[in-house]
Length: 279
Ligand SMILES: [Zn+2]
Image (cartoon, rainbow, N blue to C red; front, side, top):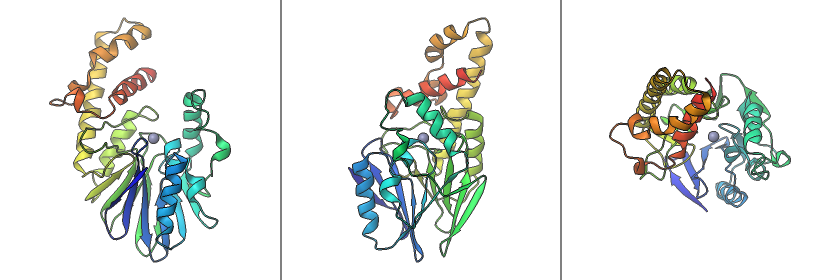
């Protein structure tokens, strides 16, 4: 099932009930630009039906990164003339996900169902749709993560660089597939943009305060992790893995918050695993 949220005259997004994954529609005189295509076939198809109601061709389909829940629906959205855009390192992200999840969930990463990009880029790209659509690489969640920025509308379509929840629970930033320092750097950079509203990769729209919230968590996590390492210099990796979750608790990374306030607390666990892996 998908639900619609209209943000402005030009911009609306649909949220899949599966993982609250978002797909965004940007309308222009010159055609439609789509950001991300969801994963559940039924939802991607429903998303396409909604797009078709506008009665304009889909000019571009931008994938914010190549995790399956953002690109697997390309085959249901891309039309003959649609140009798919992604970051030049998208295949690395696809490969990393397949290596990790492939055994468990073959259908998700079955590559014969993927429709690949025609345009890739390194740092930035601007589409002229009568107004500018800026696309920038913001590594951190994954290395190929990109954000889509509409300066006139002051809207940021963040992909998984910024995550949210149902709007009731709190959502953590997630760098298991990327790098914590790069994510901090990207968030600092986004923090300087003129933004009124953010459409996250998952969950309901959020205000730019979320950037500070995420940076607080990430910076506290880094500090606590290095303290933990210096106190446990003599432990083997296996013992570090056993104790890190008990020693660096989520509430300490975000003082004032309680574990039950969070949407997916496992993200904290995966973030810690990533830090240990990178040692
Ligand atoms: Zn992702």
